Length: 193
Image 1 (cartoon, one colour):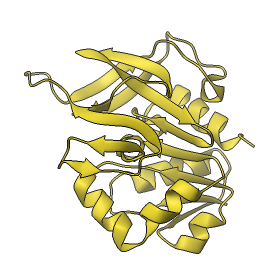
Image 2 (image 1 turned 180 degrees about the vertical axis):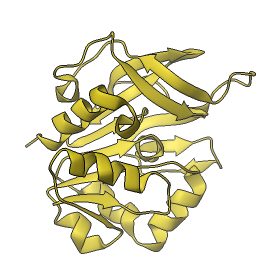
Image 3 (image 1 turned 60 degrees about the horizontal axis):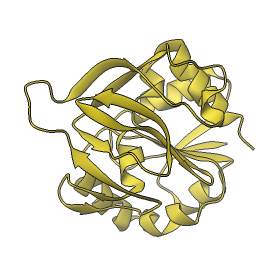
């Protein structure tokens, strides 16, 4: 069973649909035991960092998530919340990736919305993916580049498009909205042991 964490952030249903289309059973839940016992966990997100962290704390999920041992994928806000700190609402996050989430410099082209390719691809999520492939982004905050960066995107400045540390993976882009290449990313994640 694939647990999709429900924490009042958007795009939970689109992630569920994308995973089910690949032939996997899902459960949308904020239940402690269901998440702990899932084969894999997906942490989607469209929302605001401080509100999302408050909800996680209400459910004690901020204590559970860092202890999980199964493959875990954070998407967009889900990736950002796996970092140490977000400038969005001056929010202390989960601290799995020792990185800061920063706001893009103020210009007339924020948020970053649309299709971009990635550079410096590393790790198992990118099997069958090339730097020519494009992914769908929509965000005003970004994860800085650091030791856990497994791909970069350049929009105003270079940022972490994906992260990995141990069993924790993150994508700033939305694989569930990125067509066939996004499905391939999800499939690669769902096949992890």
